[in-house]
Image 1 (cartoon, rainbow, N blue to C red):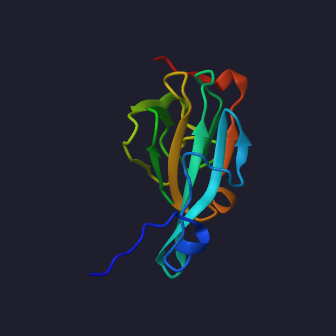
Image 2 (cartoon, rainbow, N blue to C red):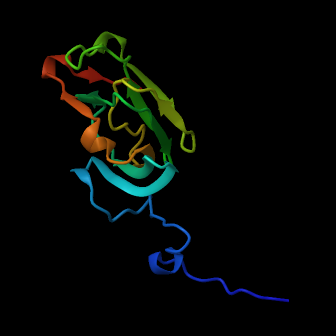
Length: 166
């Protein structure tokens, strides 16, 4: 009978088979700083010859429950999966113009850790909030480099800020 010894995972050893990334304790390049950090394109999966999906980590720390920034992606949806803490996800319907944010239709959903949720193209959203004092590591699945080529970000005017009530 053949035997095989268990090996420690390393990029070099696993390279012939694929790749991997530590999504809960990332050390990769990132956008942003605490309380919202986005560790971009940590892992790619080729699904067709011309499209690669990236797996990224968004780490959010406790911050004031005020919606002051929103974004959307025109050409793709997004998958959000909180790994180690529940999150509060803010969403507003898609609009025809980046200058027409339907703040009066903003909704915030409690998403339990381990629950994957999709966001349709055009839907306004941004880095989720934590409902407690613990940080949340969130798996984000988007086509590679969406943050650079299909991400409209709008900072709200102070009079348009929205407070989240728990």
